[in-house]
Length: 255
Image (cartoon, rainbow, N blue to C red; front, side, top):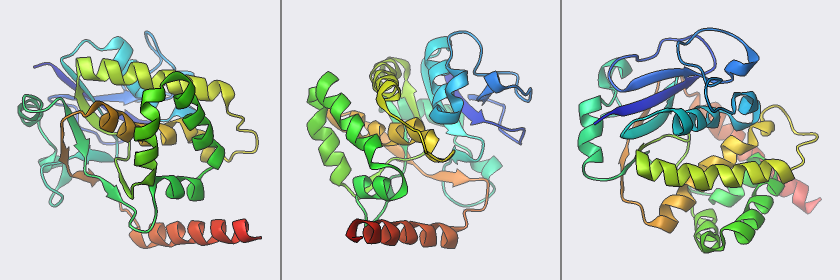
């Protein structure tokens, strides 16, 4: 089985280069030269990287790679066999990926649980509500069969994040055709005037939520693997920021 797992990076850093792993420089249209593979070759959207994030790597892989399975991870986040130990020794290997994909067509990261937030409320507390309002309208107009799954997913407190997955190529073809049609339509309609640099990454954020919708609607079989970060997570700061966004948003609504 020919498997390629893209490792998206915007900077020079240590990354796996053996087996199925293929480091790719994202936003290469803006310059720089620290990867052999860049997302500004062939059919690409590299110049959209500031708003599409790692989705420029996914688009490049979809359009330019010939493989039996294609995946996406990050220079600092990887699928692992377990969540402890030296990350460079416990990365999921190509034979393991092949074994999993012989059982199911998709590998996903373990779900994130927000506990006190739904997928919808977490997003609007962290970003702009109009991102999801427009996304829902686009689904209603172009993919009405996905509207009910979308609403169900938005009400859940768990979801797949990071835009990380490994898919058999036919499944990836179907997913990307649907996903990028929605994202490009959203891009043409969404006014991001006044957005911070962080919030302008909206199309990557929305894509994270749409993955759950697509999986649920199409009843795709999958397995989950743990994700290991190579950087410190600073969970106390993240939790504090999470709660502050919720409190600030609720106060703004009352005012």
